[in-house]
Image (cartoon, rainbow, N blue to C red; front, side):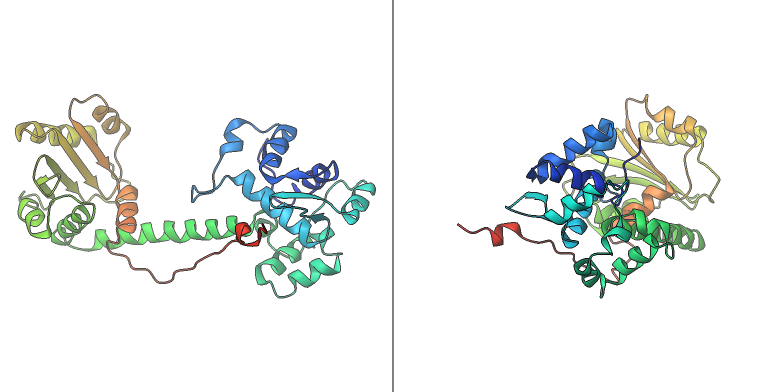
Length: 308
């Protein structure tokens, strides 16, 4: 089954808590077993790769239940059902969600000045977005971030296509140097862009000492026009002719399946860098982009409140 959303998890979290004091670290596996989740579902991460989705959703279910007075924390990393929580379970609810929690005065007070939370509450009442109701605040942030990143990648490739071949050449130089290749801008620029076909084509140092070399070729293809196996074969031939064992082929479009399969069986190490990967590396290394806003999120420091 799919990983339940955080509101769906509220009832099983409260049921577990009613059985006795629970350790937060144990609840994830207990609920995963009860829900019959696969190992893949248990380990699935948020897009940031920093937290498991199931763990994140259980955390928010527990947090909201606590704000509604249905759970309490008798000790660090532990929680149990309150009398109010047990009374709620005695009513045999088939589901506990935000609309149920909103009946608690303390929970309404918590929501009163919370913009995103208010939207979630409205959704539970049938007036808001379904996505907001079924995703945790962190998942909403992750989704918004991924949307912005996707838009930025598309914008980068669009602008690259509108600029000159010389600009593309300089972009590759900037990126390679930012990644630690080519030694310096001067050295990298001197060794790249020597072909007469308007693309980037040359050999650069893999490190500042020049202990190894990397052959680089780039083609600005329009979206939907994939680089095929013949182009990659020609690239490998140039690599062999130069006595190089490593190469990077960069394109603003994509590579055909035949081209990708071809490089898997080579004795040389050849990396195919498509448009999406190129844009990702530009974003990661700050090439052609700038930070417009930095938002820092903080969590409660449990150690701070631990008394000796």
